[in-house]
Image (tube, rainbow, N blue to C red; front, side, top):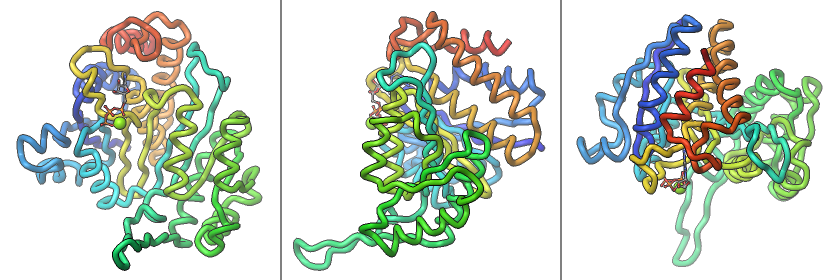
Length: 337
Ligand code: ATP
Ligand code: MG
C-alpha cells in the first residue's frame, strides 16, 4: 500500500529544515523500497503574502488527494493552517511523545511518555459568549463518541509500548463532563492494559515528581495541551519534540516548535523534531498498511538520530553542539546507511 504525502515547508527555519531533510526522505524510500510520493504544497505566512491566503485552493486540492500531510513550522498563520486542516479532516487525536534523547543531560533522567490528547472538543471548541458587560461564559463540550474514539487511540498506542495508560481528568469537580470522559476511557481501556486515573492537578505534580511512572496519558483537549508541554520540557526540550494529528481519512505530522525567525537562514536550526515527526508518519503508515517496511524505515531513522545524539559530534548549538543543520542531517543520513 502506497501513500501520497503533501509536504509543506512552512516559514522561518521551516524551509531549510525541510528542504535539507529531503535527502533523508529520498534515502528511506530507496533503502526500504517505500511507495511514498511527496508532493510539495505551499502554506503559511510566505504563501499568504504571495496569494493573500495562508492555505490557497491549489494547495487544498493536492492535500485533498493526499493521505498524509507533513509540515515544517508555520509562523503567524500557524492557526489558520493547522486549525483549518484539523477541522476539515477531523484530526481528532493529537499524539505528543516526550522522550529524552541519549547524551543530552536531563535532570529528570530518562523519560519516555506519550500524551494522547483529544483534539476536537472540550473548552477549545471556542463556544464563548458575552452574557453582559463583564460577564462571559465558555462552554465545555465532551461527548461519549469522541471520548471513546480517543481512548481507542490510546489503547492502540499502549499495546505497542508498556501497556500502561493513565486517564487524566477532574471528575471530582466536573462530574458530568469529565465524568463522561473518564467513564468512556474506563470502558475501552480497563482490563486491556494496566489502567488508572488521575486528577489533572495531581498529574501535573506527579509528572515532575516521578516521570518514569508514566507510559501513555490519555486526556481531554485543554489538559492535554498543558500536560504535553510539561512532559516535553521534562523530556529535555520542546525544540526537539515531534507531534502527530491523527484522523481516519488523513493525518498531519509536524514539529512542536514554531518558525523560530530569530535563527532562520543561519543553517543552525535543529532538524530533530521534524525528522522525528517523519518517524511518526512512518509509524502511521505501518499501522494503516500492515507493511513492515514502514516499521523498518521508522526504526532505522530513529536509531540514526539517537546514535548521532549518543556520539554528540554533530549536534546543532541548541543542544550543545557546534554543527550546522547540514552537518547534522548528513550525519543522520550516513547512519541510515
Ligand atoms: P512561533 O512564533 O512560530 O511560535 P517562535 O519564534 O516563537 O515561533 P518557537 O518554536 O516558539 O519559535 O521557539 C522559541 C525559540 O526556540 C526560537 O526563537 C529558537 O531560538 C528556539 N528554537 C525553536 N525551534 C528550534 C529548532 N528547531 N532549532 C533550534 N532552535 C530552535
Ligand atoms: Mg513560539
